[in-house]
Structures are given as C-alpha cells and as structure tokens.
Length: 232
Ligand SMILES: Nc1ncnc2c1ncn2[C@@H]1O[C@H](COP(=O)(O)OP(=O)(O)OP(=O)(O)O)[C@@H](O)[C@H]1O
Ligand SMILES: [Mg+2]
Image 1 (tube, helix red, strand yellow):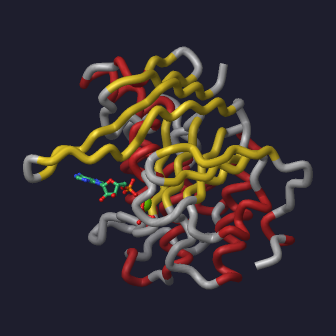
Image 2 (spheres, rainbow, N blue to C red; image 1 turned 60 degrees about the vertical axis):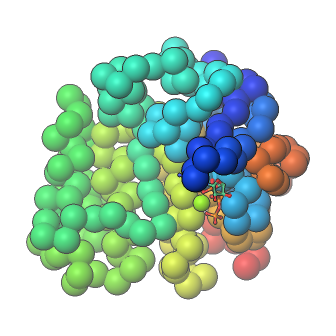
C-alpha cells in the first residue's frame, strides 16, 4: 500500500511535435511520508504531481494509491478520487476573490461528506478573526494558509503541494511548512512537496530528484528536521 508508480510516461503533443515530459518513472512512497521533489525547471515535477493527483492523464504505466488505480480511472471516477483522496496547494493560491476566507474553505468542504469544521480549520492555520476577510485583504502567507485549510478540510489522504512557498520569504515559508508538517502529523497525510529550494529537503523523509523527465535519484533521510529548524 501507499503510492506506487510504475513505468509512467507522459508525452505532450504541441505543434506537430512530441515532447516526452516523463520517461519510465518508477517510484514507491509509503503512507504518511513527506516527500520533497527537486529538479530544474522543465524537468517534469508539476507533470508528475498532476498525474498523481488525477488532474492529468499519462500515456502509459500505472499510478496506484492505496486501492485506487489512478491511471486507469475514467472521468467520473477521477472526480471521486480527487474528492476523496487529494488536496492541492499551489504557488498561486487560486482562492476565489469574491468569497471570504470562510466561504473559500466552505466551498471545498461542501463537496465532502464528512468535512472537518471550518472554524477549527481557520484556527488551525492561524487565521482566527479573519474568517470574513477577502483574499485581497490578506498577505501572501495568509492566503497560502487559506489554501492549505481549503485543501485539508476534506481530510485528504494525499496532499500535493506545487511550490507552496515559492513566493514567500524564509520566515513565512517556515511557518507554512510547519503547518504542512502538522497536517502530516495530525492526520497521517502523505505529502508531496515540489520545490526549487534544496533546503526544504531537510524536512523530508524521502527526497526525489528529477532530471529531463527521469528520476535522477531517490534518497531517504536519516535525520528529518522540523521545518522551524531548517537551515535556509
Ligand atoms: N501542455 C503542455 N504542452 C506541451 N508541453 C508541455 C505542457 N506542459 C508542460 N510541458 C513541457 O513539459 C516539460 C515539463 O513541464 P513541468 O511543468 O512538469 O516542469 P516543472 O519541472 O514543473 O518546471 P518548473 O520548475 O518550471 O515548474 C517542460 O519542458 C514543459 O515545457
Ligand atoms: Mg512546475
């Protein structure tokens, strides 16, 4: 059980040419792990994450998560898979501008049968008293807290983060990573974090490096640091 990826290939077609974004990717990740994915721009990190989260299809190979065979799911089942299993956090927070903090989280909670309590989520991410604010009335770090609350209110088994601290300073980044670590600890959520910042790999159980759409290396950390202790 866990996340098992076998011989995954992803080819983009554009302007009559094919581009191999993922080449024979094999990967095993255990439940409850924090994995950091590193690699140069264009190496296929987002492509891999989107395939794992069921928001993009692959050409061949298999992606399995617990009992779900993600790579063979069809439209309706994919929606169910994403709803029941996956939370996404992106660099750009993708909050809905004309909804308040509370309403942005509520929107995600509404599609779940047994969501966590929205007020408790707001408290958990440190935004007490800000429930009625609109995204434009929040700092970048605060907006990122909302997007984490929104991602975890449905209690996903898998939290996929694409550059979650990409636009934040180091202190705010550490706060956001601390929050992500808490989610991991409290709910045993398996977490994948894409980053350009090598330092973040200090908080990972497993570090995956991609290069030209291939796995360059996979290493397991002997020492895992709390986010606040990361040397930036
Ligand atoms: N829709 C698409 N059509 C064609 N090529 C694409 C498409 N999406 C991505 N690519 C190409 O696939 C490769 C991998 O893209 P991907 O977004 O996964 O990279 P990345 O590692 O996330 O990069 P970054 O760090 O810049 O976000 C890139 O060369 C990109 O140009
Ligand atoms: Mg990317």
